[in-house]
Structure formats: C-alpha cells, structure tokens
Length: 177
Image (cartoon, rainbow, N blue to C red; front, top):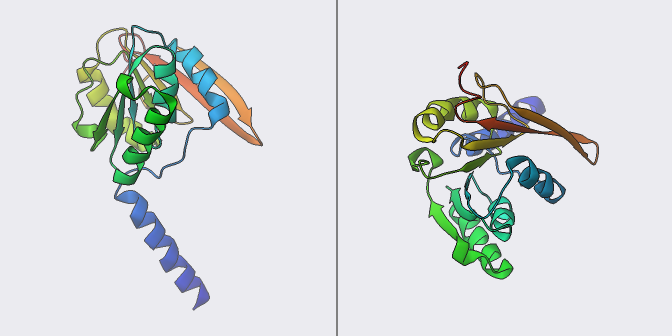
C-alpha cells in the first residue's frame, strides 16, 4: 500500500511538470560569467532566454550591454523576472513575454539561451533551424541539441555537480543535422 501511494504521489508531481515541458531549475549564479563569456555577449546582441525563470541570465546579459528577451510560461516567474530586472536597473533593456517559447519568433535573436531538457531541445531544433539567422549563437546548459554539433563544450563543477555549457552556431552546428 505504501509503495502504491508513493508511486501515485510521484505521478502527480511529474504531471505538474509535464504541463510546462520542463521543471524550473535556476541557472546557478556562479555559472553566469562562464555562460556570458562562452556566448560572447556584447552590446550588439539580442539575447533570448527560453524559459527565463527569474530572469537572472537575461539580466546578466543586459548588464553587459545586450538587449534581452525573457520568455516564460509561468506567470509568477515572469513577474519575478520583471521585478528582478527593475531592481537591477536593466528592465528598460529587456522585453518580457508571458507565453510559450514555441510561439515566439526568434528571427532577431543573436543569442538564444536554453536550460531545458534534451527532448525539449530536440523539439525546438526545427524552430531554431527555421528562424535563427546564420551566425546566431545558441547556448545550452547540461542538455545537448540532438543532431547539432557543438562548436565549444565547457565543464564546470558547482558543489559536487558537473555542469556542461554547450555552444552552437547556426550555419555551423546544424550542417550535419
């Protein structure tokens, strides 16, 4: 009986996540400087974060001069991202979209950041191939884009966990898709 109940509770938790495609796990703050360096974020960039959560990655990009776009389906998180950007003094450099990243046009992005799951990255791959301009950079954390070849891979350890930053470039990484 206990096992059956525990299994049912686990299913309830998983069904909550499935409605959003991905559970929200914030990017560790100590990784932000590495992500910005790998992505080569600068003042001429338009930085999209698909599933931005509390906005920390886009806020860091905006602090480096980029214009940002936070895309988040969870209303409470997009509100938190807006408040965090206001508090950090970069809200005027960021556009906030409360909605699904599958519905957002990425054609003006120079950098796209994704801390999603491999299956979601795979689902997004055709959208990235269709909408991104040549030379656009895509940075993923921990989960690869199946069928694309990263141009750079970097490992970092936070606590006892290994984190992997993947850099892809549209027109290079997707040629063997």
